[in-house]
Amino acid sequence: MGNTIRLTAAQALVRWLSVQQTEEGERFIEGVWAIFGHGNVAGLGEALHGIGDALPTWRGQNEQTMAHAAIAYAKTLKRQKAMAVTSSIGPGSTNMVTAAALAHVNRLPVLFLCGDVFANRRPDPVLQQIEDFDDGTVSANDCFKPVSRYFDRISRPEHIMTALPRAMRTMTDPVDCGPVTLAFCQDVQAEAFDYPVSFFEPKVWRTRRLSPDPVEVEAAVAAIKAAECPVIISGGGVIYSRAEAELAAFAQAHGIPFAETQAGKGANAASHPMNFGSPGVTGSACANELCAKADLIIGIGTRFQDFTTGSWTTFDNPARKLISVNIHGYDAAKHGAIPVVGDARTVLAALAEGLGGKTFGAFSAQSRLDWQAAVARVTGAPEADTPDYLPTDAQVIGAVQRVSTEDTVVMCAAGTMPGALQVLWQPAQGGYHMEYGYSCMGYEVAGAMGIALAAPGKEVICMVGDGSYMMANSELATAVMRKIPFTIVLTDNRGYGCINRLQIECGGAEFNNMYKDCNVETQPEIDFVMHARSMGAHAEKAATIAELEAKIAEARGRDIPSVILIDTDAVPGTGAGGAWWDVAVPQAGGPERLEKARGKYTENAARQRVFD
Image (tube, rainbow, N blue to C red; front, side):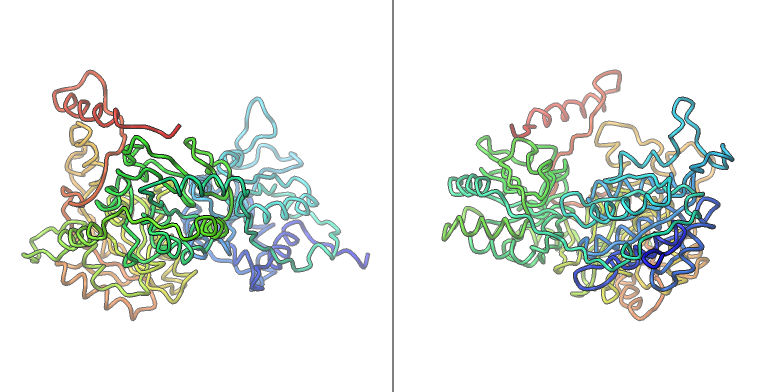
């Protein structure tokens, strides 16, 4: 018996997690966000209490948003560390499915520890149990299967000895990285087992760097050498590979300009001379100009989402070819690309060696300067900056930009601001955090908290509209309790202004987006300042752009979150940049406005060409 230790399955699980380490000797799972219910309080709850600071536990307000905080934490730390999240069975678990989908799309590690039904089935059906009339093995947690990179159900205490290593392998593998779900039967959590002592020895998990196939590198080098006007599309994989400097050096050495996707933006500072902004729907004019004439697009760490490609209308050159450098063969082989499967940093080194002294210069440096001047115009302070003037979102972004520092990280997720920020925000290196793979409304407040936890030396500014704020704001109370400072710039346009503009552009009538267009007798007058104050945050309203700038600067000295409300105009867009986005317009049965929108849609759709 000296080689074993008797523990409950839950106790064994948390003990094992507490000794899984990064290469720097730190915990990989930094802690566990928890909301307890009958499905996890007696098992995992007691185990977490017993292990104490060896694996810290933090209380959240909502299962989905505490998972968002965990995901933002992992994203900020470039997937080098992660967090776990636990809930009871039933609604507690299914509340987290959206967060799991978000992590899956963005290839981010998070460990979901979901309480599950009784493995012994004696008390079936238990409270909150979903019963499948045709399959006795199904529970609510099966919803996680399509949105998890690895899924397992712990129905015996010894199952954790195989499930946990598989979970860690998934979260630390750059190829398969993503969310892991362990459905943990609630009776099994409390069952004891004699575990081998060796199972709890500390283990270091190293992030491997995959070298590319020489034949694939050779093909890519040949394609680059044959090109006249290549352009690089820098994606989130560049950041996760920690290849920011290598990409900038490669671009500079070979005279190939680059544009950054939503996930890749901020890998290099906007001031870098080869950084032409962003491509596609919310792209800069200079980047889209490059993409339109490019005969070779070199994607590095991107999955070529429709916003990046302008729904495949951004790359207009009929002779264009595509190279896709990606850690996963699934992404590298998309759209008939010349694939190069491997780590971004390693591949860049191999491409540089193959290219030797080959250089290009088929781009206009002046177009980049002209674009920066256009950004300055639309983001400049309004001439009539008075309390009765409603500023645009671009002007709000300009205010934040003017008072930002090298340590400022601006973040967002959904609505107007993601597009406006991608096209207009000029970040320092690392100064941008956007969840736009899933574009999940409600990520913003919790995500800002996660960033601040991961990077306490940074100034985190959360840009969020009233629509997203109303969806999920309760983790503001958590941040107050834990004294996690960040600043929320809350723009109130009295509805879903972004989708309202899209509705109009698609020929639709203004309907059900702005409060004024909803079927209600009384439009809500929400006092967001008092709401934020009720949760303990410092909250105030800025009447002007100048006041907004001053209040952002004042917030830097606080140890709790600050919320700054400003009313904005819902009508104007960014006023600069952009490209077409494929949002289908009804083909029949509509009034003249729909017919006009359909004509425009048909014209743009004719330009689409997916690589083949």
